[in-house]
Length: 124
Image 1 (tube, rainbow, N blue to C red):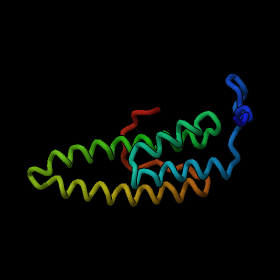
Image 2: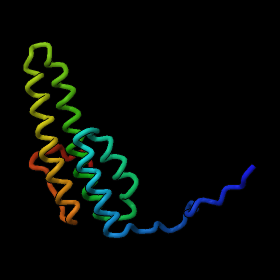
Image 3: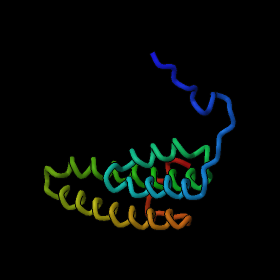
């Protein structure tokens, strides 16, 4: 059996802050992740980076809040597909998530904060 080296950080050790470029990358992935995996990708990025960067904490929460709204709209749209209006609301949410996800990712990549025009502010 091969002995594996110990993990680089031990429990209770101080958290190593992210570099600016890494923080921008985490935030960019959080926003862009809402396009394909709403709420899941931002949640993962936020949980990984919230203690390491204030920028990731802020942007991850913002993207997560919008992702939660998107999931709710997708679920309601799925229910409303019985009366055919759900198809329109589903497509509309997909287009809105695409546009806002790209805008948020571009701002985060530049190191700027992005606030979605409408979102549920559940995670503060």
